[in-house]
Amino acid sequence: MKRSTILVVACYVASVLFLISAFNETPVNSEQAANQAEKHGAEKAAVQAKGHAPEHAAVAGEVNPFAAKPLPDEAIAMLKQGNQNFVDGKLTHPHLDAARLKQAGSENQGDHAYATVITCSDSRVPVEAIFDAGIMDIFVIRVAGNVCDVDERGSIEYGLAHVNTPVLVVLGHTQCGAVTAVTHAILGTGHPLERNIPPLVDNIEPAVRKAMADNPGIKGTAIIPQAIEENIWHGIEELFMESPSTREFVSKGYAKVLGAVYDVGTGEISWLPETKTLEILKKVEADSSKAVAEKH
Ligand SMILES: [Zn+2]
Image 1: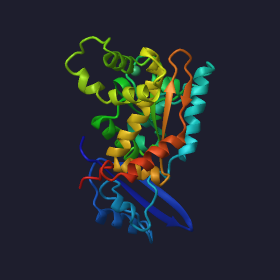
Image 2: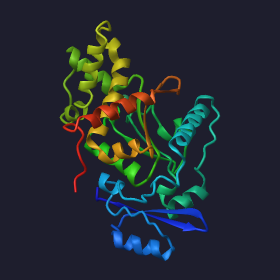
Image 3: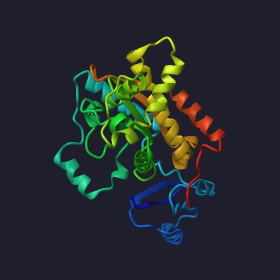
Image 4: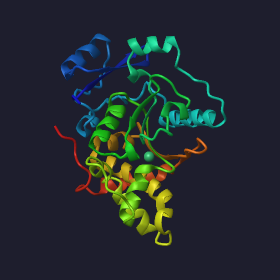
């Protein structure tokens, strides 16, 4: 994916801060941004010319690129309410009409989408439906086993840095076939895998092994529920290790990363503790050999 950029211009007008945020596929340099800010009579302009690298974050007067969006907790509340509607059989089917389609064809998704969700490709996890959401509501990444490998991390970075969703959910699910297959492989009860599957599921293996090590009393495939949860934490750790921009957004409180497990039999989502996400972030940040820096 080409590097894309974002232009954020803050305008102070009559003591009120108006934020104009626009996602632009074309690189915009800082001079252009400054000129535009001047045009709006702004005394201070926050200019982010090349993504959200830590060095830009330190620029005085930086504007929160998520400012026009719901706060992270508000976005989480929207997701929770949407899932409650789904579980209760009271779907409102928002944002699926002709008016929304027209909007989608003419407006920036970055002005609307409130969550990025990475989840499994499993057909029992229809993302928009389980959150009672519609068009331009959720930036979705789906891959078997909801692994956070390089392409998925790039997609997540896009969802946060360019679509500016204030929350990322790493959503595993009960009875996950990918986690089950890896568990069987480790137990020696698996079957030969097609050519491209091993490099896909190799992200899951450490999670299953950790679940086994942490729960020595749980034998055989009974470990799968623990492995499914561990796979979510492992994905979040890999994301934090390899994505400086995600670390930065979470550290600053601009965005939140949450783990969750979807129950394919009830439709309910169990939200995992946010404190553990922050512990993982702290652990990664404390280990500079693990936490990679931004490439420029
Ligand atoms: Zn799955």
